[in-house]
Length: 137
Image (spheres, rainbow, N blue to C red):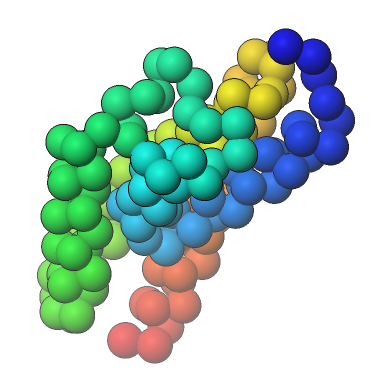
């Protein structure tokens, strides 16, 4: 596989966007990534180690988790508990979404370093949302 800078930049941008959106909703970006991979819309596809993400059991689990997460967001007390519990979940989901979106066209060293950035993006978006919600409650 040859290194193509434009493809690399595009996949990094896609991965960071997916990671940042995981800071708002942990499972929705993963569901979108999985569906995109399943229908062949993900540029470069999924890496071999993440091919399980596009399989039916993962799609069902992500769909149920997304619905439950959105429903839990509508109950104020439950929403605050979920926000607290999901700090590591959203960070990990951001890293996983980044790796799923960017890894197939990125060199290994870049994926490893940028995964840290992706986790930070997910965590900072989640923290910002939590502080804004704390002030509005």
